[in-house]
Image 1: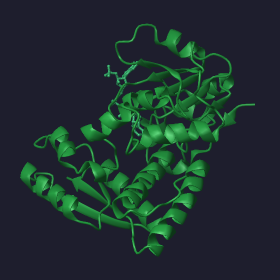
Image 2: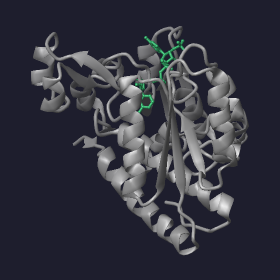
Image 3: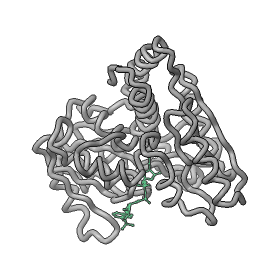
Length: 314
Ligand SMILES: NC(=O)c1ccc[n+]([C@@H]2O[C@H](COP(=O)([O-])OP(=O)(O)OC[C@H]3O[C@@H](n4cnc5c(N)ncnc54)[C@H](OP(=O)(O)O)[C@@H]3O)[C@@H](O)[C@H]2O)c1
């Protein structure tokens, strides 16, 4: 029987362990602080940062939110970043992507103090990850690694095909899974929009990770029996035009979403993939909750490092 990996349950377990770490820090007089910076009023970004702030509160961390107008000059954002770098109550922070056109996101990332870069996007942290000396593992790839562990799927010696080579998911995940360390030691193939014969690459894999942003691109015909399938994709599809699939799918999103006129689907066609997979993550309820949990993880780690207080990270 296929193991449908419950990302909410795995994330809850990690959050419970992080609460113990927060208690340890609290006993030493330290409250971990996570700041989110939002430039503009993109509705999806507003939702993401409000969830991150709520997560902070729930585990007893200090959440700080900074909002700048969508037409803010780059210098205004740089001043905010400089203030956050200097603020000792802020142990980690992120600038929510995307930023408006007048701002160069790469310059933003370079300005963040690498010790507070809990997304793990600063070039110094990217370099450390590649070198096998990660300070902060980027949240989504780290969440994928934790999900594999929770499902008792050891990447060591396995063929992994990652579909997608983005800066935030595909590339760092490939680096994590190829490292000569626990949770790594895989043979990794990274596919992208120019890859020829994608199905041949996914069929030969023991583990397939889809991080594309293309609804249900990977289906059961592209998988071999017994594959582990991790679906990172989150795509809104029109509930009206997709009625037939949504009513037959065992993994459509909630009726709340359907009432809003859309539903969430992944980059994997769940029903046909589940027929072949030994383990598979659903969308929603798979990788998404893990990304949020691993942001809390990195913030606790940042607080522990900056305040020199030992904690037992999960
Ligand atoms: N659950 C979570 O917490 C979480 C976190 C982050 C992202 N996501 C979701 O994950 C998905 C990917 O996000 P991202 O930021 O990594 O996306 P991205 O930056 O747009 O990258 C997409 C990647 O997919 C590749 N690609 C596009 N079409 C392809 C095709 N037909 N065949 C093979 N590869 C193809 C692209 O290739 P090129 O490089 O050649 O363009 C690119 O490398 C999105 O749905 C996003 O919403 C979820």
